[in-house]
Every structure is written in structure tokens, then in C-alpha cells.
Length: 442
Image 1 (cartoon, rainbow, N blue to C red):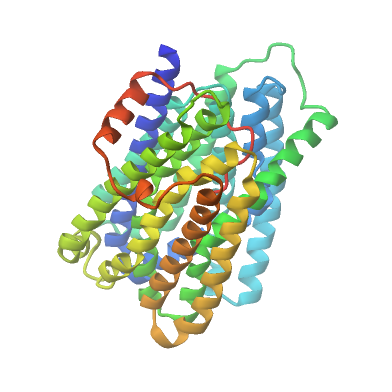
Image 2 (tube, one colour):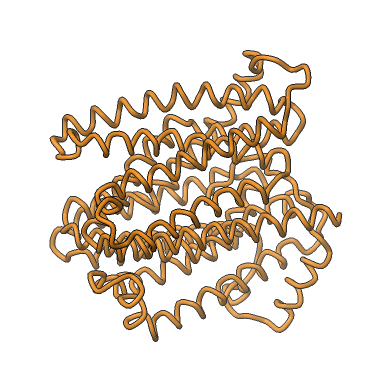
């Protein structure tokens, strides 16, 4: 039990440090390139991420489940992941190349950009797969340490080379190279730490079919979640200016930072709720929702009070619209915060269709709202529509949950004296860490 608690702590600590390094990088990129150019880079990464999501088929989900359950050899699967990276990376690169060609973008003839795109594609795939392989072996701290170290090196390079013309000219290549470096290091260390023990080749066809079938189930939920959280990027890019896009993406990225702890805690709650061993599971769930909601509410109130001064100071003067865009996103951020534990509750009861249905409803609302309002109301409408979509998602989940579990809305909203004590006791008692048996849709 003590080892389990230490593993959870390492995961939260180093994953948290990784996201902190990502935040610092986002700030440096924003100051380095200003709103217009940084928005273009993050928009490019968003497009590439969607292509990679499709070609990866969420293979990491099957990897984690079947290796951690003892049904799959890790080293054999690691070899298959390398082969899949080559195949999926080639498909992704071809789709990206064709997309650049037929859209007539100026990036098509840029050798640095094309090279950087290949590095990003390969790096993301390797990082995703080998992170999953490490996690399946219950090694949570080390892979995140690699990601943190590489990001720190890039941060130092950007700070020290801020005035360098070479760094500015090759910035995209350097930035995307860091992703490739992370993936290569993770792959290399995994094979060093897990030498061959008689299991050669790759998994058999029946085993691979089993893994891929599971992964495709997770892919459905992941695609919907991706579109819910990022489809507005494409619509803002189409209807608004490049500067508006840069401001909007950074505002949403700031909001996503507030959802890191709820998402991690939601996946941690899954085994607790699915075990059926806790008599007060519903009361525990409501407590977690209240605590997370009030923590993020306090952070949001602070940003409302001081954000108009602090955000342009941190990100740069070109991000003059970011504050208001973030304020308009706050209702949606808080709704998403409260939604993660409830989504875990439905997933733990093998009711993932409830999560997917709510996400689809949110996606349709965001898509219709942005197409109708964005051309006339400008970029602020995107924040309002996204908030409305996220809030609708939360209301849908709440209604279904409360139909099946009689409770009042105040049980989820108003903090209680025993809540902090409950969290302390939960940590003290060392929740057992196991992996989800079903993919969790947010």
C-alpha cells in the first residue's frame, strides 16, 4: 500500500511539473512571437494533433489496459509500437503534405516547416505510446521526468537565445525537435530498462486484434472530446483574424490548465468507484466535485480581479483580448471541472454512453452556435458559445445522475466543513491504484 501511495504521488508531482513547464513554454512562445504568429503555431499543432489522434487509433489505451492486466507482453508491444509509429507517421505525414498542397498555404514550400512537421509527428506518436508503456509497468515518475528535462532545456535555449537571429529563424524547427527528442529518449530508455527475456517478435494476431478493438472504442470517445474542446479553433481561424485566434487559443489553454487536476483526479476516482467497496461512494463523489469546484472558482475569481493587468504583463501586449475571452470561458471551465468526477462515476458503472451522449450534445451546440453567431459577433462569441456548450454538457450529466441518485443541487455546489477532512483521510488511507477497465470520456 505504501508503494502504491508513492506511485500516485510521483505521478501527480511529475505530471504537475510537466504541465508547469508547458505553461512556461507557452508564455515564452507568446512573448517570443506575439499573438498572431504564436496563434498560427498552436493552430498548426491543433491540426496535426487531430490527424495524429486518428492514425494512432488511441493504441495507448489498449496498451495500458492489457499490459497492466497481465494479458500482453510489454516488450513485444513496444516493438509493435515502433512499427506502428513508422506506419501511422507515414500516413499522417502524407495527409499533412496533401493538405498543405491543396490548401495553397505558403508553408508548403518551406523545408524547415516540413522537416519540423515530421519531427512533431514522430515525436508525439513515440511519446504517446512509450508513456503508455511506462505507465503500464507502473513507472509514472520517470517518463514525466524526461519530458520535464527536455522542456527545461528548451526554456533555457529560448531565454538565452531570445536575441539570436538564428534561433528566431529556426524557432519552429527547434520547438518541434523537442517533441522528437522526448519520444526518442522515452523509447531508448524503455528498451534499456526492459531487456529481452525470451519473448521475441511482436504480439500474435489474436492479441493485436484484441488490443486494437479496445483502442478503437477509446478512439470514439477521444475524437468526440477532442472536437468538443477544440473545434472552435477552426471556426475562429475561419471567421476571425490571426490575432484573435492567438488570443483565443491562449485563453483556452489557460482554462485547460485549470482542468488538469480534475482530469487526473477523475481517472483516479474510477477504480475507487468501480470497486464497489465504498458504502458512501456517492457522498465521496459529491465531496470531490465540491472541493474541485471551489478551488477552481477561487482561482478564477483571482484572475477576474487581477487578470486584466497580469495576463498582458505575462504573455505580452499583443494579448490584449485574452483577459475578456478567459472571463467569458469561466462558466464553461467550472462546468467542466464539476463534470470530470461525474463522468468517472458513469464510466465506473459501464455507462460510458452517457458521457459520449453528453459530449455529442455539447459538440452540436458549439458547432451550431459558432457558425451562426461568430461571423457577426466576433471572437468573444466563441468564448460564450463554448461556455454554453460545456455548461449544457454538465447539466445533461447532472440530470441523469440525479434521476438515478436522489440528491439536491446544493450537494454539488456548497462546500462543507468535512470536505477538506475527507480529502485528507482519502490520501492518508492510500487509495489503491489500478487502471480503468473502460476508456473514460470526459
